[in-house]
Length: 247
Image (tube, rainbow, N blue to C red; front, side, top):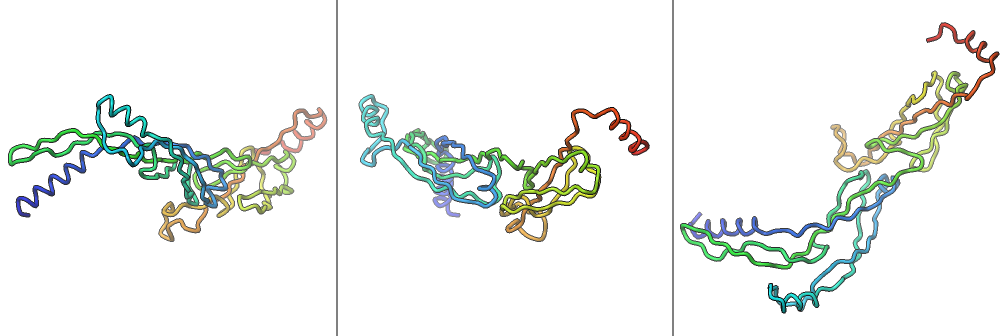
């Protein structure tokens, strides 16, 4: 490149690097498990501090500071937040330049020659970003395990030991699944129902078959075996007779 073109390029890169961004405004956004599964749009009204557009300049003098304070107003803004299917607790959604307007310092090129680069500090108005952080609400029926959901169901000791065990399992979609369990069930035993968990977010699928769109995790059924608080002596003897030698 010609010398002057390269000089302008270097100066532009330096100016960009020296620009400072105001600290973001962080807001927690509570979401239900259903909202994160199906996706939705949430509306949040925020109040931010902004300078009136007629305010001409920024100065450190007491008079100008008083004038600045008079021109700083509270402004209301409604933000529409897209919640994608499969989002998780801790995921962030950023709205650039929608927060409080603050003064930030940046370095401005003052003079330049072949031997030196001299910069001076100047102040400018910079609106902060608003960042929403997903906070998943506790669910009364399900516990999240990444893209899977866990439902705990109680079964009696009798049903846990016999082939008569069949449980009704709720789903996030609202329908119920009847799950037969002919095997012996121990406490905290789990069975997996494929494709009845949470929606996978776009790009979360690691397989070669797709990118997560339309795919779901699993529904895990955890069994809580209810043991009797007490047993009659004769019942205990009968159980010992029936269960002897069984491991």
